[in-house]
Image 1 (cartoon, rainbow, N blue to C red):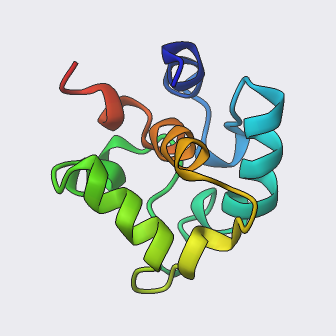
Image 2 (image 1 turned 90 degrees about the horizontal axis):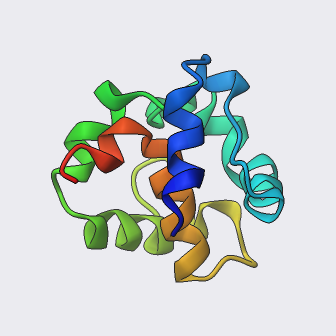
Length: 106
């Protein structure tokens, strides 16, 4: 995944409802499948770009986050409502939404 996609989310300092991936294909997937919950934190979903929300999740490891995305976890349905996404897209979306929390260890 490109750092430019992640850095766009964290660099703009916009509220989670105004953050979108720079890549148009990833933006389409995010808008269709992730935005409705992750922009507002609906049902306890970690808000896009919120290091506070995402840090504890990244501490579990990216493989756990990917597994939760694919299998479903708590209020999130399996595949996060993105039936067309593969692992690469899920990882890119997780890293984008995680913002600075995703890159804290780099």
